[in-house]
Length: 273
Image (cartoon, rainbow, N blue to C red; front, side, top):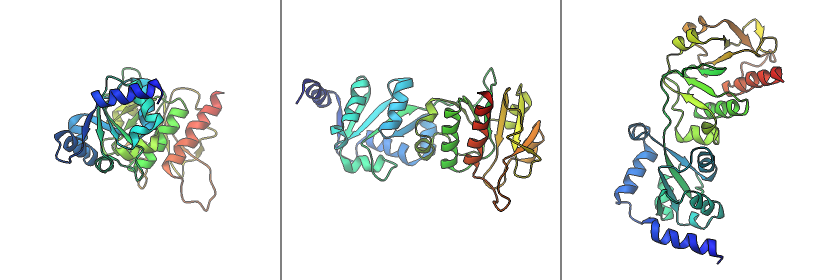
């Protein structure tokens, strides 16, 4: 065993708390967080399940509130590297059976971290080109939209009060670390936001007369995307400066909201080049 591996093993032995019983109070608290969105909201915490999410968080924000490692995951080179990068973290070691109860994935990678949820529920001082989501419900759709926003250099994303929780485990998995490259504002009054936005507010609608490919997207723009079934509300549509559509085959009923967002965002990227 090399010296670094020996030092890490020694650190784990001395500094990490080993939990083997489901009756342990710390395990019970973690289990509540894993199973209940209400518990996560009350505690102000979110759970990052997997190496990639923790790497994305650690690269931008440093040490999480707590790290939980499985017995089998302890041997992973990637997990060992993460533990070395967070020597001051409150770290627990669980046997594989207990760890699996906490994990939200079918095949756990062996590491979970608890972080303080970055709650933003008021408008920022300066509004920039952004994405506005009106009652988007599907976690996979929201995660994909966040990834597209991060890739298209859109920093501000605003969610209505009825939208899916942006920090749920399913959204976190779907976004693959994009949460830590953008600013997510939840439970926002979208009507007030649209009225306050300093640029143009564009609503996406299936039967809109204007194509997104002909719209001028080079200035400050707020893209509005709606609920998977109902679309953008009538009240929010009235606040828009223009309605735009994505041209498609007439036999196609509609585009998935995440796909529609990607098309619009990257048309803006194209126009800015």
